[in-house]
Length: 319
Image (cartoon, rainbow, N blue to C red):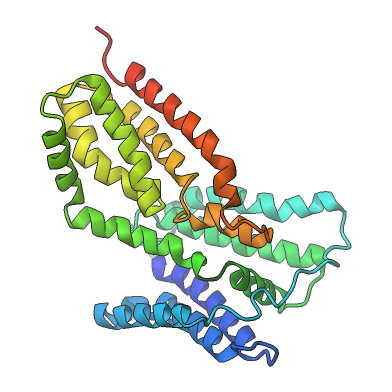
């Protein structure tokens, strides 16, 4: 039976390859430190489930210490970009790119139906496993197609991954860290605290003030946590469910959809959403590290205002 550990193992093998590529490169000024960072990251993916909380915590502290001491600096992106990429027609380059989503969707629908020796192929305990397994298979299939089309050596994926990771640096870990932060917030009762604060600030709230608090709160919490998915349970438990749905009988489907869109407005203006806002600036070598955020800020403000208006007019039942 396949579990999420198989998907994590693929990511761990990739980071292990990056660690080896950096450590074996004599041109890297901080090769051992950089290799140690990605090596620890590989261990977390490969063995994190068996290490226990204390060992995983020590591993994370090791990652932080290496990043803080400049292990990811030096010849960042020294592997360089390849310019002699493809002898194939340009349109064929879209084939691997389109293969990933198509294969991911197909596999996520088919794999849960497959049974081996009377049992399911995928573990039913992990709800996200079909999508994750489908995505992993899609990436592997696309990689094989790309290698055939571009006729690159077998080491090319690892070297390209190494170049990308060195260009991005520590920001590549932010999605994982922010997802963990969202879980910590939910388990520690932040949603309940927000509910109490909202009740104290709005002793007799009307519909407009409730909508404003919810939409602006979704954007603000997303700015802090860098992830609207992490902000959603906090604001929904604190304001959305007790006030919009409970007191004013709002439509929870409309509230959830527009609430998430309001959170995404915060994603556009926060450096915490590194994969959206900092990584592109690093890869494009922009002089202004926050240039993407500055360009997106006016759009974010207009979208947030539009989402708030839509929430007010659509979420509540018609008289």
